[in-house]
Amino acid sequence: MRLFLPELYKRNILLFWMGWIHFVMFFFCLGLLSFNHDLIAGESAWAKPCRYYLSSGISIWTLGWIMYHINSKTQIKVFSWLIAATLLFETTIIFIQSYRGVPSHFNTSDPFNSMMNVLLFSFMLLFLITISYITFLFFNQKKMPVSQHYTWGLRLGLLNFVIFSVAGIIMFAKMSHSIGGNGNDSGIMLFNWSLKHGDLRIALFMGIHSIQIIPLLSYYLFTKKIQVINFSILYFLATLCFLILALVGIPF
Image 1 (cartoon, rainbow, N blue to C red):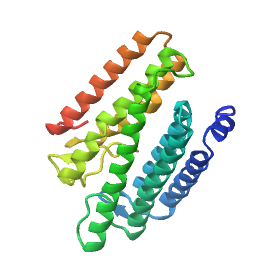
Image 2 (image 1 turned 180 degrees about the vertical axis):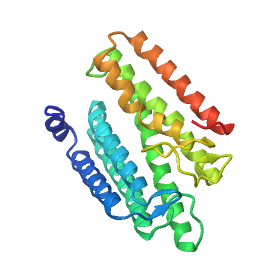
Image 3 (image 1 turned 180 degrees about the horizontal axis):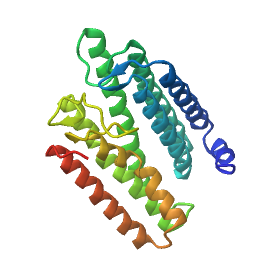
Image 4 (image 1 turned 60 degrees about the vertical axis):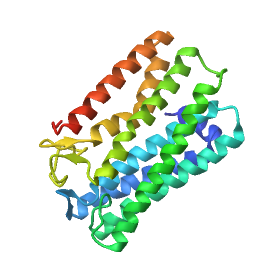
């Protein structure tokens, strides 16, 4: 971390500071957990903002780090602003809805909540389109200034991210992350994944954080391209299993 942060600052100053904003908000919401005991859908009102700020901060720093390898500096600048804006707006909406004491996702109880739900989906979709195009560039760019096995770790991490973002689209199509339940039951500690019904959030979580797991292992553990590909296939199959289990209503 001592070397990572100065290098990230050089690579992408916008996403460096945007990541810090999300981490500060994570600790702020974590503090609110101790003072506010209101519940939303069976868990603390501030648990979801905590998860989203932490996950978004990690993703922002990751993307700021890996986009450095894209040849076009203009494209990097555009992508950085899109990533910063979409994730900031998304987490802000979640924060506002938690402050109001109402669910942020799949909430169409009145016109205002319906509007917030539509905005959440819109920002999520724009973020996914951005990451999809970044993934295309990583596969299309022939020369990378890093080793071949690390290059494929970056490519396949991004590809898993894009593929399993479909779990998020299914959630919004169904207006629920739960299969076989109403989504209001509390679940496993920290993640709140359901222990009673199928939960699409597990596959989504694994897909989102494949951009950390696969590249990190490809850099620190693997030494050959085939090792990265084999691990990525196993990771894909494991995530696919969680997605299928959720779709048929089997809990974690």
